[in-house]
Length: 258
Image 1 (cartoon, rainbow, N blue to C red):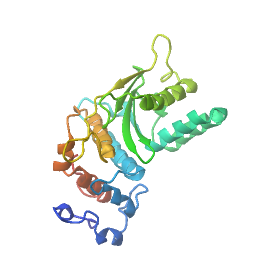
Image 2 (image 1 turned 90 degrees about the vertical axis):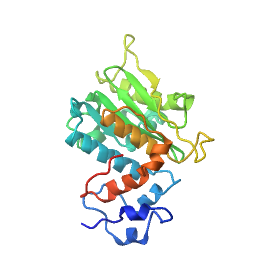
Image 3 (image 1 turned 90 degrees about the horizontal axis):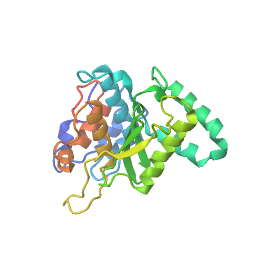
Image 4 (image 1 turned 120 degrees about the vertical axis):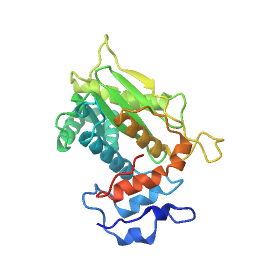
């Protein structure tokens, strides 16, 4: 298979998305990724759910097939961003919760996990504030602890973030699944994971459109069992957007490390 784009496309003063992209078919085995989805990987663009979920799936499959030394890959599951949307729906429609609970549990059975996602020790899931921001949550079920990775919030647990985590907790408790329900002796607690912070180009404002990149990088480091020590400069210097593009659109080639 021919590469859709090469590293040369990403050199200075070159357009990231070229006409070649529209002329090439999707790579075999690609997961619901259309050519136009790649446009959000251009600099200063916010990632969409397709790229976020494809990159997350790719990293998870790599984790399952080549786990880090002394790491059991079977205790961790990565859920796509649609899981969070279903959790939001569950929270916002109290009269339909019995039906929605059944739908959520049926939905997970359609996925390729060997067991229920409620049985995993570690659950990783991206969270989206519609059209504005991406975060990552790490849920440790045995410890009843949720860790939030938010790249534009040093405090980590804002009132808005707490609402999202409450939705996860309430769904887990309503499920009556022993692995995720809390108790007086061991209630769910929320923690700031101290995610690296993104800044604008002159490092003057805590803002930017790299929140999805930061979420993917945190996910990658967690699955690799490494410390999360990257920063905004690392994102730019190591062409992380370009590497994500190449990893998604060149499936039969060697993966580029993030």
